[in-house]
Image 1 (cartoon, rainbow, N blue to C red):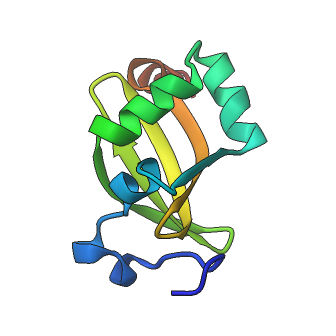
Image 2: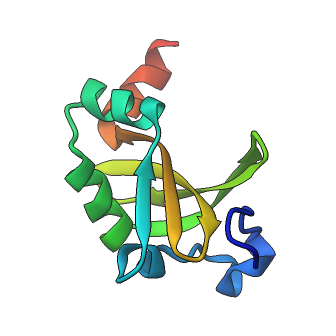
Length: 107
């Protein structure tokens, strides 16, 4: 693994993202401008997103824009992340689960 290259699902243990390592000592979490805007739109804080990463259920989501993305869910929130390395998490977007469902119904 070379720092700065995205982790593929096969490079993560059992296909799960390395969230605990990214939140531990030496780990980094970076929020994109889009993620910060979505957090604000749903009246969430960066701390809410970090709590989702600590306690949510994670799984592979998709491959977009040259990165493998993982969705981390709790009952109330969803956070989509990518990994630049085993210790760097990039938060792509986030939303309150209930509000996302309402948005989908309106479309």
